[in-house]
Length: 336
Image (cartoon, rainbow, N blue to C red; front, top):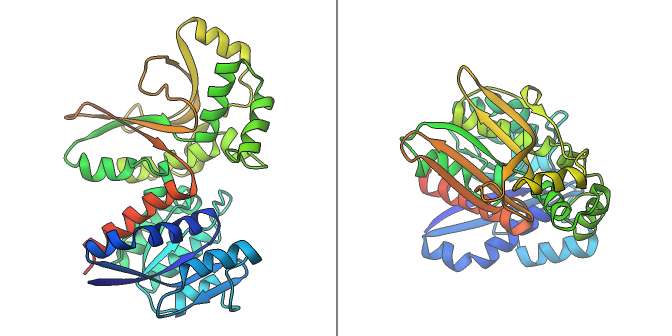
């Protein structure tokens, strides 16, 4: 049985989702010869540390009751530096302004010889090359499937399942909130503001929905795809971004009359006529990209396999935990 000790840095919805996933999948992991032992969990108030393994059920309960995981004043950076473990799961909130505090946490983990798995888009959208260089320099694994499509495996699909193919272009719907809003507006003829309020009530949109509706979240994901699959060395500032806030029910009706729907599409293509942009586009109703609700979809155009399409839930606590768990398992299998 291979034991990997890990910390969970950030214990909001995603962090708790990971704890729940580890509890649910304990039998599966054991059958795969893996013992994943969480030795520390931290949030913005402090940490709980137990080198014999944190009681995950108690930790989830404590967070719900008191709003914090903390049983000590030890902060996240100290956990990463001082607690003896192999792998850091970094799931603090995305900050597109400077990538902090996630950027510092990841770099610190690499410098202490710890593998990193993350769902945090900000650091990768701003400092992708620096993070990859630091991981390589310290001979550790760095995986981030959960940053792009939640449960939808785009990176692993492109890099593993489609290995040997040249990926020519990728286009897709990379934000479930926008897709929900546009789908509802199309189906019911409702205004943007009305459906946004509905999405906020259902928990699909944040109180401040700017990251989603202005296309910022999609642009961050596109940068990660451009860098990791196409080696483009771009940042968020290189993306041409238009959101969905100005789309009217009338525009959607006109599109419908022509057998089309309007979707917020991210596109990335390398080479002489390179593209990296997020914008509303007309999509034929029968096209693979015309998915509804909160679904995400990506269409990878390849030289040998042709077009390959993958659809899935792009957000949600357990869906994101699914991608993180698959990255953790991959590191366990590939590390010596």
